[in-house]
Image (cartoon, rainbow, N blue to C red; front, side, top):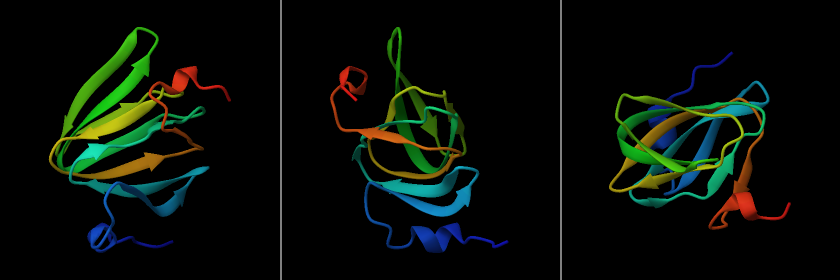
Length: 118
């Protein structure tokens, strides 16, 4: 058992890096910091993912069967990413986020990862 200092972890954290803090089930809990930009696509085939915005805000783009859905998530808010759906972060000015990913992740830099051959 161990307490984790999130502020200390965030100090010096490089841009656009998902930094794992501790294991959680088959995945991990971690932090993400970014001043602007778009992250690669990711999905979690077996689990939902919990995102909590600590500072700033982010547009989370989720690819659904009906097309992309973009949700703005501001400081102090939570967002649950549905299981198995590709999603990415679109950051306008700044973001500090805590994430909880209970299982494995897939990543993609394709324009539309649903059309990639696996």
